[in-house]
Amino acid sequence: MSEYANVIPSLFLDFMQMQTFAQAPTVFVAGDGTSLHAADGRSFMDGLSGVFTASLGQGNRAVIDAITRQLERLAFAPPLHGTNPAALELTAALLRVAPAGVAAVKLLSGGSEATEAAMKLARQYQVQAGQPRRYKIIGRYGGYHGATMGALSAGGGRERKSIYEPLGVGFLHVHPPLCYRCPFDQSYPGCGRTCVELIGRTIEAEDPDTVAAVIVEPISISSAGFVVPPPDYLPRLRAICDRLGVVLIFDEIITGFGRLGTMFASEYYGAAPDITCVGKGMSGGYAPLAAILIRDRIARAFYGEDADNVQFHHGHTYGGNPVAAAAGVAVLGELLSRDLVGNARRRGAQLRARLEEMAVRHSMIGDVRGAGLLQGVEFVRDRATRQRFPAAIRPGKVVERAARERGLLLRCGNDFAAFAPPLVVTEDEIDRMVTLLDESIAAAARELAAD
Ligand SMILES: Cc1ncc(COP(=O)(O)O)c(C=O)c1O
Image (cartoon, rainbow, N blue to C red; front, side):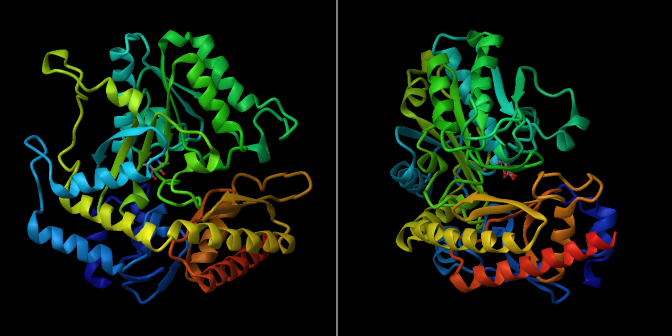
């Protein structure tokens, strides 16, 4: 690694204190299947699909061949002058699997681009639907929709946004549906669903004629914790948005493309949004690729004569890039032909059962929750009272470090650990990953007890 030692301090990595990173840098040099290998000889099981992205694992032959063929034919197509067959094939493939009623697609190259585009589309739609005063966007505290200014404004994680404030005008936030720690001190299912009813009341209090859209992640993994809504949350939110004329945006950048054991979370929860944001697993990490999927009612408002000026005034240089699109077509082909969405369901059930069994043995696991291959545990000091560890202890980070030392990559917040392994994961790999987590939690518990 000494060959990189001089340059590492000159790099800005994502959300990383580079001085600390430079003391013990991880440089990934190769990957195969669900494993990643670093320059210093360490290997890791990828319990997180990179970052909810590498759904097919590394080295997928079908995707590599599709990208290579496309590179040899056409690497870049000028987006201001036309499109290309790969982008059209991807659009057709997306329309075949998209949530009910989707009639149009805008291809992009990253998740933040997708959420930004969705919010702009919602605002422009309201103008074109005769509601030009509707500009406000409601997101949730703790939510994460990307790192760009608009996405950050809609997101609600103060750790990542306060330093950049003031952000966009017209962004409001409500509390997320975290039943294990209900922000309203109620308990499901006996509660009045205050978490979702409050969205309706917020829109009414603001004046519905001023609200353009609500944006939510169906399942959210963020500074708010690992937020899995109760089953009727999204259907109720759908009904509220319909009643009040508000566009509903699902940020499915993590949950889309099979993660929950259904192609999209909207299918899992039985509630279709007006705009779906997708990215990450859409290309399996083989190319930067994202999109928004647009329902017919919205899409129609953008189809008109030049003189109507109803086109979507939005674009990016790499939107519809042929190489990225070819990756997307091949990834969808793999998901469907190998029934990887079914595998996510089956392996997800196995993962859930193993985590629940583990929770019996580790008193610091207070809750196990998730859907499909997105499962996690929440850490507590006292399971009976759900009391957290003191904020400075950050048990999730202790577990994360212990897991890394044992060769397992996870997504840990201060108080939780989440698994999102590649959708190609095998039964044996799930067992090995959970065993590593089991050992890591035991080591973390010993460390915390010694403190
Ligand atoms: C739910 C969600 N939305 C949006 C984004 C932003 O995507 P990107 O990092 O590709 O811009 C992320 C990234 O982690 C995400 O998890």
